[in-house]
Image 1: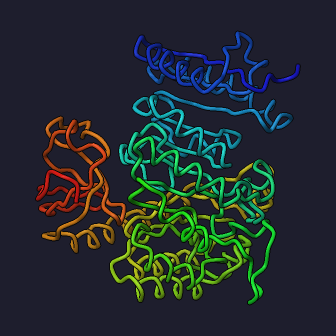
Image 2 (image 1 turned 180 degrees about the vertical axis):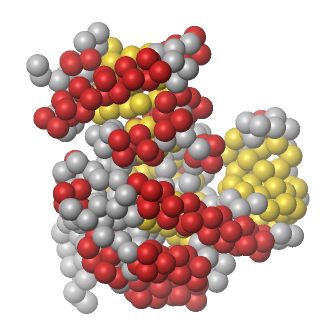
Amino acid sequence: MTTSPRRYHITTFGCQMNKADSERMAGILEDMGFEWSEDPNDASLILYNTCTIRDNAEQKVYSYLGRQAKRKQEQPDLTLIVAGCVAQQEGEALLRRVPELDLVMGPQHANRLRDLLEQVCDGNQVVATEPIHIVEDITKPRRDSTVTAWVNVIYGCNERCTYCVVPNVRGVEQSRTPEAIRAEMAELGRQGYKEITLLGQNIDAYGRDLPGVTESGRHQHTLTDLLSYVHDVPGIERIRFATSHPRYFTERLIRACKELPKVCEHFHIPFQSGDNDILKAMARGYTQEKYRRIIDTIRNYMPDASISADAIVGFPGETEAQFENTLKLVEDIEFDQLNTAAYSPRPGTPAALWENQLSEEVKSDRLQRLNHLVNTKAAARSQRYLGRIEEVLVEDQNPKDSSQVMGRTRGNRLTFFTGDINQLKGQLVQVKITEVRAFSLTGQALTLAPC
């Protein structure tokens, strides 16, 4: 049977709460242009909203998944999602048990389905089960906001990292023209958006496929040139970009970020491993020494810049000593935030076929040890904010305290303070930081008007 390209099917197990969640997720999918399919085999997106109270229901989920996982091997465009209580309980272990899955999401993330699917469309396997994931970082599009927006600048990816499926599902790199990007930003500025995040799977590669070469021999269009070109768009107060690749990150780009006032002092640059042999096996195209030089250069130009990254532990063949090189890199650099994951074989990738896969026990142990270090270092990095005055762009009300609003510093640190969202949403406010945590801050507003 041929799969209809924009049809979905949801199977719901368990209680009324699960049924209510399924109704909400169905509404999101239909708003995205999907149509309901009674027959799961005629759908291009299948979602199982699960229950763990009865073992029979849980086992039935795995039975259903087995059939659809086999189907996905023949139809790679099929999107498979597990939501609800089994997803919350199993988390990343569910991905390793069923590697064909695209998204695992706990019940509290039901209303984030649109944003999570954006990440899936970028070729990522996504796990959203921890409360911290509700707080989105800049690598995640926030299209439901009226304050911040994302603008794609380059599609696809020409890299061939051995663990990554993106080139297989997103195609080759294709840059948008600077004029089209500026026009989209100008329209967002007219609509009242204040912050733009320029997005690309490998955003540093922007412009390589566009025509034109400068007298010095470099590409006429680069990310550095784009930042300068869109910097003065009316209404836009802040500009961010993600995700960067160390292979292409340049001092020229860093210098531009310092010189352009609207570009925020935050850089998301995945390193994936702190060991050169593992980086070579991953086909990343750089060494840990080069990565360290990039960070040193950023901090030379902008000593207070925030640095976030991604890291994978338990890659095939990784020894304890190689893992400890990753720990040492994290210890030395002291990231503001680090997204971590245990390696999970992705169908259609070279590394998934290698025989030197590590056990789940080893991967889990290394992930826990890395996360402990990440939290310790992030908490220490947060201490520099205590007592400082930070510019915060107010995005929304604090969902846990209606007397507070929340927004982000230029360094992308989530910040809470007392205020009226009706007056402050979309405003830049000077906030004195009175409390610090590993990944968020609390403060007191010094101005209740734009900075």
